[in-house]
Length: 147
Image 1: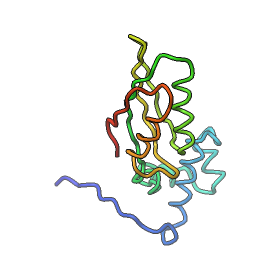
Image 2: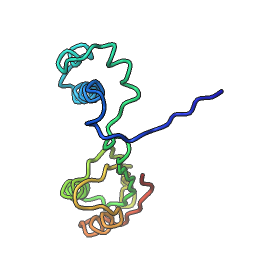
Image 3: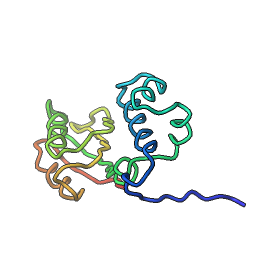
Image 4: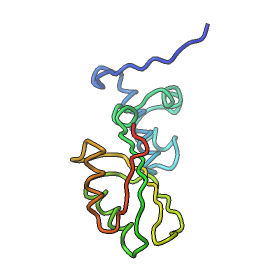
């Protein structure tokens, strides 16, 4: 009989302390504040065996379920500072840039694909699209996908 995964959202205050500590170890390792799981476990006060028991099954709700990731395809004029202006606009909207891929310019324009994690004031990707359209040198924008 095949066992299916089941996700449950639970208020952290009712969980055993070890779960919060596992999340903290994962954060320390991801941010490279600690270089090894042994050092991170020691810092938060749990055993490595407890960490390894739960690490693949425990995720922060914000990290796992609310990642508003948007993929944008832009056509930009081949002029100095256009891509920088787009990135500054994304920064102003509290968007976290995950990837940027740019093709070689042809006929005075370049295709750019940007993956971002939405944040801040803008909750609607189409609002962001409208704001980016106002950036000097942006020829076209298309939302490819979003979670």
